[in-house]
Length: 487
Image (cartoon, rainbow, N blue to C red; front, side):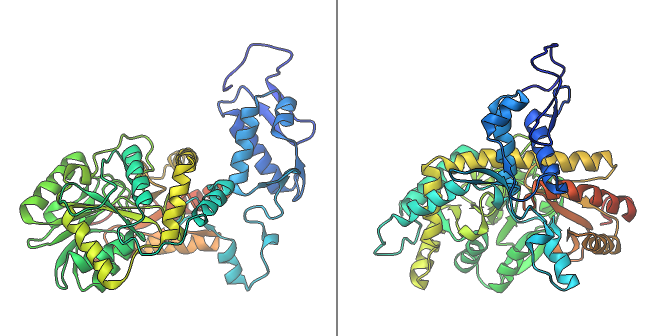
């Protein structure tokens, strides 16, 4: 890829322009040519130089005009298609969309407040890059899932092909070797299909714990998990976290279970250190804890090597939970549980007695995505896209002198502030400027000790992120210094 000055060549000038499009590429720039091209076209569509319905040249024709490889133009078009700026019409060509991201003309008029939220850029974490899923692959997977004979009975542990696909996924992307099949031999961990993390937690609360049992949870932490455990009658005790993860000394004597997200703590974004992981599972064995490892976005990591999963360190005391919610879409309703034999047997028995089981449709779709290689391609594309978005946000915050945490993995990071009042003011000011932010205070079980905002960068489009960053920086500067928590 051309990223620096090139030898003088009359056939390939340092700056080239397309006679048909408002595009200029500079080979002296350190920015990759594909990124330059995507940004030029995005800006032209945003400011009206390219209008809805305008037809774009083919990737081959544009590559010839700009004297670049077709790989450059194809990569730029792929990015703009994923963001919703352009669309392809079979047999017709590529066109600027009729409703670019954030276009007011794409939405009916609403009362002022409702319209403001409708058009706001949503930077709250938790939602995936669903717009990046290849639509042809998605349709192909659903067609394949529909071309399955009706099942005569429920598969309580999950469809065998799904459990095999998950086992392969865990081995390839998380380094965890597990058995796909379920039996009652009592040997090794097995994969169970689930409806997602929350439903898996509800099943564990019903089968492995009793009302009144004490469960320690990270604080701040995932409040839906807290609500699920409380609904089952469990006593939830907050355990503070630091840069190395959950503080083990805060786990009370007599606890029956510990819930944590060691790969990318939610919401602060830290990684549990290797030493603390070992200490956690050793103490779990001594004191009889069931450790619930929520690996909600473990496939997404950037500048750091993966640390051993708790399930790999101690398969006898750890239940590992995973989901497609952050890598595909929560609407698929497909997740997994990797657990010791006794836990697996108890959950399957519970499903049999209650007549419940995870949806087969979502499982079959994932099987088809994996079988066709589309799941692997999507994950590579997802990591590349989120890595670039993360770099945009991190570089901007660093250049603006804003302190941030938790950017090593996942699809969000955290900007701390010094008080609850500062957090509330920042969120409200952002809402008035068209940005939706999530505060840290609401994620506590006990008295809040962390204040600030969690910034998600997956759900919005790349164009929206570009637009939001300068507004966000202005709000953070006016809000005062970003400092450590008081407690």
